[in-house]
Image: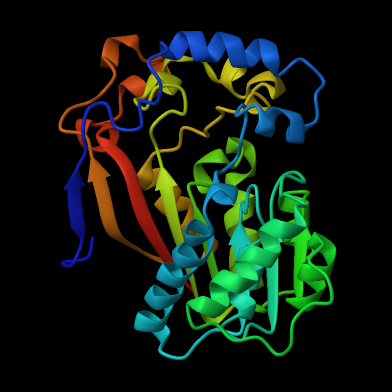
Length: 301
C-alpha cells in the first residue's frame, strides 16, 4: 500500500438508508423484481434506481471534474478518450467530457437506464458552460441520441459484451462510482481483462468501490450461499453485489496486467455484521478485510 494512503473511519450505520430491516428490503425487492415493469417505471417510483444523477447536474459534472483532476495529477495533459462504467440514470458525463475536448467516449452499462429527458441534457450543457467548459458549437436538439452523437460518444447497454466491442488500446481514462461491486462475480476477472485490453499504454482507471451491502449498509450480503446469491433472481433485484473483498478485486486487476494502488480506504471501526451470521465462504476473512467499507482503486497500464 502507498505511504500516502488515506484511511477514514465510517459510522457503523454508514449507508444504512431508511429504517427498514435489511431482510425486509430483501423480501420486498425480490417480490417486486418479478413484476414485469420497465426500469423507467421503477425509477420514477424510487425503486431499483441505479443512480440519482438526474437529481443534480453538479453530481454529474463536478463528479466528472474530480475524476479528471486526479488523472491530470498522474498523467499531466488532458485525456482525449474516456470510458465510464455504469453511467446509470444519465449519459451526461459524455457532455462533461465533450466540454473538456474529448474526442471519443464510451459509456458501458448492463441495460438502457439513462434518461431520455431533453431538458436534462440541455441543462447539463448550460451547467458545463457556466463552470468554464467549452463546446465547438451546440447540438441542434437535446434528444439523448443527438447529444451522444454531438459528444462523439457511444452508449453500450450490454455489459461485458459492450466492453468487448471497444477497440484495443483506445481508452486513456476510465472511471466509475460504486459500479465494480455490481459486476457479476463470474464476469469480474474477464471484465478486468477487457478493461486492460481497451486501455492505452499509460492509461489510467479510477474507480470508487463500495463493499457494504445495498440492503442495510453493513455486510448482510455475506450471510447467503453462492447458489442463492448468484442466481438471476438476486442479480436482477437491485441489491446484488459480487461480495469480492478489496484484496480479491486488487488481485484480479493485477492478474489482468494493471499496476494497482489504493489511495483511499473507508473502514468500519469493527466488523459490522456478526461473523457467526456469515456463510462459511466468508467466515475465514480477516477482520481487516471485513472492516473495509469503501475504497478508491487506481489502475494503470
